[in-house]
Image 1 (tube, rainbow, N blue to C red):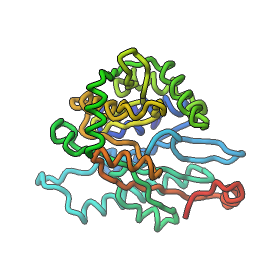
Image 2 (image 1 turned 120 degrees about the vertical axis):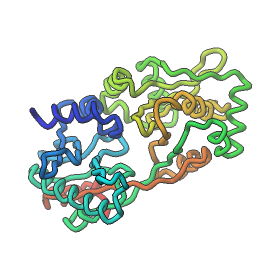
Image 3 (image 1 turned 30 degrees about the horizontal axis):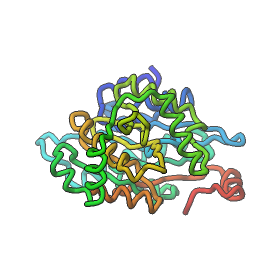
Length: 327
């Protein structure tokens, strides 16, 4: 059995593995150009997994992740002490160090010229990677944990967001969760064109990713329209058992003040309450976007980007092209 075949079964048994690391997502977004590290203990039990995408660039090999997902990185299956108590901080750190050292060892046998990935926010340190010469910098996302209590959730929103939602509701705007994929992609493309921007979704087979998410029961297209059926805002929603993610958003900029984007988020949170535990705005280092997410009461959550150049030649090329990794 190949690692990927085994990983398919691991994901089936562990729906808590982040959606961007799930077998179906890796297949949908990367085709055949991916694989997975499976880390075992001395008893041959699986203690960690780390899927990775494989890209070719100017004849060099990059081990990374799909451009359109927030994070991949290791997923660790922590041991449960026999006395049913939680691991001590010391035990947790020692276990992580063991896992990370094995991951590093396997990564460096792949023959790649470079490695980079964003690690899930659940991975809070990277010291073994640092000791092995990997570089790290911090990125941020915005998250709403514990979305089950609607009253408490609405109270977290700033007054302007509450006002926008009430305005949209009063004016009869409505949200649905079954928008056709082609209509969404056309709308997304148009909204970017109106802002003078290229739509990056055209770079990838995003239709296939969306359709696979729908098939897996872990994604849909959310859209908000006015009383005449005119589309005002839409986005691609994906989720796992822990978090839902707000990605690939299109908004009619001429009518955004009518409250459609805010109502869309509010109705989505209601839609998700029996599907997952929290909502991730899928991060942005952009000041304006981050400000909007904070107005929903979202918490600022760090996650780490880890990278290493194995090839000096590729590192020089990356610097000359101005695409080198930071720090």
